[in-house]
Image (tube, rainbow, N blue to C red):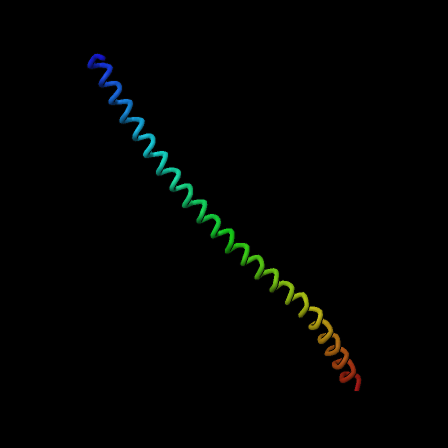
Length: 82
């Protein structure tokens, strides 16, 4: 093996090791990013459930308030005629 061949082998080895290190870093960052996204999705799911519960309560309350408002209007109309 000549000197040129040895230099080329050293250069390629260094480049390959740098490439492997960059790949390992990229994979670890990707795994951390995926875990963060999973946490965000879980919290978003909790928020959606909370909003759905609040909407259900509001829907149930809205019917009761409409009935109360109707009774209130009837009372007001009867008091106004006297």
